Length: 327
Ligand code: 5GP
Ligand code: MN
Image 1 (cartoon, rainbow, N blue to C red):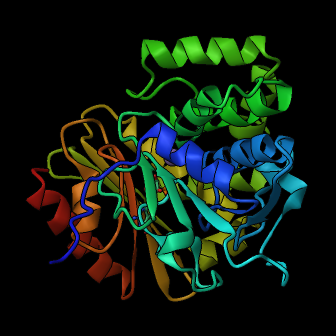
Image 2: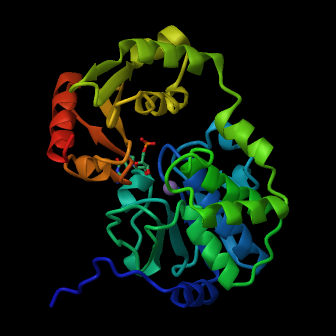
């Protein structure tokens, strides 16, 4: 009989028993890392090293400029030590499937994997799957583990976890900002997390190139379907024109979503023959389900996918997927 693992979530004691049993860990963040995947991995990694465990950090892409302030970020790389014990536990943060870790991830036996996440539609790829869809960030899933292990929350841990919250709530704006999230954030500030610094790093400090690129993308945007759908694109030529790079595209999609009357927004990033699509919803259309129709995933209100083909084809496919989800 095929083992049914769908939607099985490991309990907190099961995960903690596994963490105690292992001596060595590799914390894995997803490609194009954000403050949640990285902050969550660093938080658990810092806590485990305090228990005398050996901890490494694997992330295929370089740490983005605005996340280098995170405690421990300098230890993150795509190098994998060649003396890892065979039972090292690979801990994946903030990803629905291991493909999100990128093609440099070596093959890893399921037996040696822990999956910590809060996405809808997580494939439960781990031996243990600590997937809590009601949590606002993967970092707050980690916070549950830290609490259960009685880890004292110092400034470094508080900074990592508050960064995950501020990243995934858009600075306490999105609908996942529950009263519990605000209470926890307050506790993290009292433990030493500097909200001003995190705000400045994540939402301020804009490069001029990013602001120019935003202007270009906004001027290319199209508002269609009676104003319910707004889409735009950025491509290599626009990056060159603005002296910008891919990191400078992060903010654009948020602006498309805030337009009055818009129910769904899409940004097509056409780089190197591949199209990365970011989708956002204002709460009626499930963009995770729309992205999943095209091989992507995410959350109800924020999702993404990669499309191989022309921009016109990508636009048609995404509009059809959104329409199928009620746009
Ligand atoms: P973003 O638009 O910021 O890149 O991604 C929005 C959300 O969708 C994030 O939660 C991210 O993890 C998820 N996401 C983005 N791209 C993909 C993808 O290709 N596959 C899956 N499964 N999730 C994605
Ligand atoms: Mn997240």
